[in-house]
Image 1 (cartoon, one colour):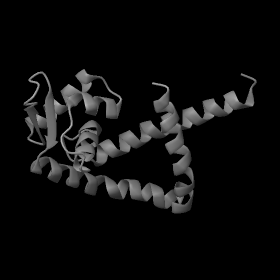
Image 2 (cartoon, helix red, strand yellow):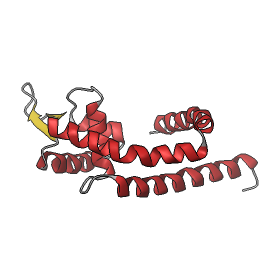
Image 3 (tube, rainbow, N blue to C red):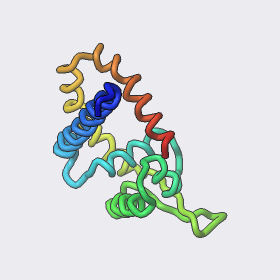
Length: 147
């Protein structure tokens, strides 16, 4: 690996992967009891006014299998955080919407994790975070294009 760009790429991905693991661990500890990051992510997505979504649409949005999304949605439905209904035009399809209890759970989770992520931003500095966001966003977009 004598190419400087390859070395740079390995360093970049090593840092991104390590940061992801550490962030997930920290957020998992901060989330309300019984809530997983996947649960919060789906609730947060649905809470942002996306309306009803099919499980397949959600699976694509989170780059997970339909089976993984079905598992997450089943857990969320069991505790009353989402409503899953059949598609009236095609009984093979379903639609998912966030429930009032789900919105409250999402808000509680957001309140729990905001101080944790806020401390990290404060420690790094808002200007540095603003400067790195466009690079991370472009990295995410380029990685998504390769799917």
